[in-house]
Image (cartoon, rainbow, N blue to C red):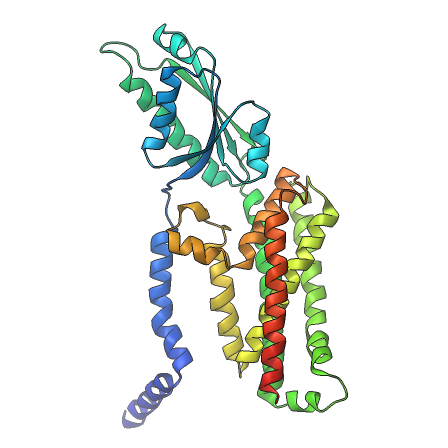
Length: 368
């Protein structure tokens, strides 16, 4: 028993002396509780919607204000024609469109059937379903508020329609997210591990005294993982298309080009992590907790970013997968071109340049 207690004491001392392990043991539970407490929720607020008011009467204006009064919806634009709805969805400016018919006020008070149409962006099926349910409940509440005693409150018929994902297939959401995770894990994690392994085994010094410059050493290390990652992404696209019927409505060369750009960002992240990690364990932990978890929880892969608290929304904007998933959904499900995804592509380009510069700078500094 004395030997056992001594061994336990030694393990405690080892953990307390390893600040990285201690931070993971103490920090991870706190981080998970906070993230899941704020992110995993069925509620939402300030969801972006657009309104096409064909009536322009007093009751339609009151109905529009009723939608915003709950705090769940935020009207981003008042449309002038039905054709503008698709452009709003493709640009990501709105997730729900509300169409108010002609003679809305007259038909309502004449007890005629009044039909309000709701059109949702089905590229995020769970979020779209929630939006439709909330909007339908608010419309029913609006009818009850404006119906007299003893009258039937249901004089407005709600017609709903999904675009981009009419059957609400969950594969439309997880296939783009899985591509982002695969490229990130294989590229960033495996790259950081292979370079950290060289340093841990002491063979990095042998490589550095070889005729190859440090730049070529890095490229030679990451090229195999880049090829494997790209082939894995193509495999996921093929499986998604033939098994789960996930379409690729946009340009396939554009889609593959963006995958290569995101792959470059992931490789740069892996090299940057490896310059800071002395061991494979440190590299794996750094890749796992600084890349995989934020990608799953804060990139919009599982939970909508607009429903998160403002600080977490800011954090999500520095995660490369946030922009990559947005581009994938736009090209695959909406068929958009470079004009609609120019901003996220530009952000990924900037991230690639910045991360490569930091990785190369850290690599050179460490070897002086």
